[in-house]
Image (cartoon, rainbow, N blue to C red; front, side, top):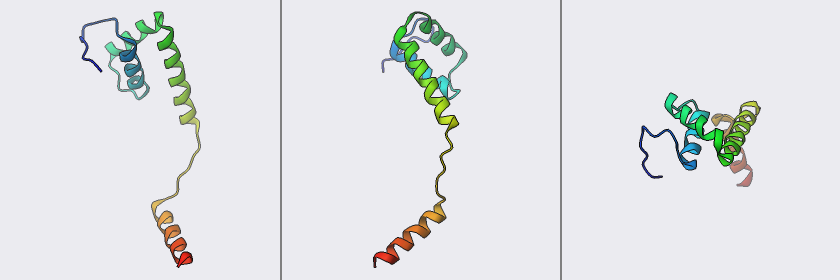
Amino acid sequence: MKTTNKNKVFVSCEEAKHICDKNQYGEASFLEIIKLNIRLVYCKVTRAYSKRNTKLTKTINKSTTQSISASDKEAMKKEITKRIN
């Protein structure tokens, strides 16, 4: 990604997408959020990207996936190895 002028109010679509991703994780600065909102007013592509990003974040936050603990995983590996041999 090319370097950008920090004082520029209008950002490219690619930069807006990057700011959108940062905003999703709460890492965007106040000025970046303003730049993103300006871009969202006139760019259909950025609005669509932002909408998909928001939908993805909500879906991930609502998910109830669970993972196996490291100790249980090791126990399963040992059991499988034991049965194979």
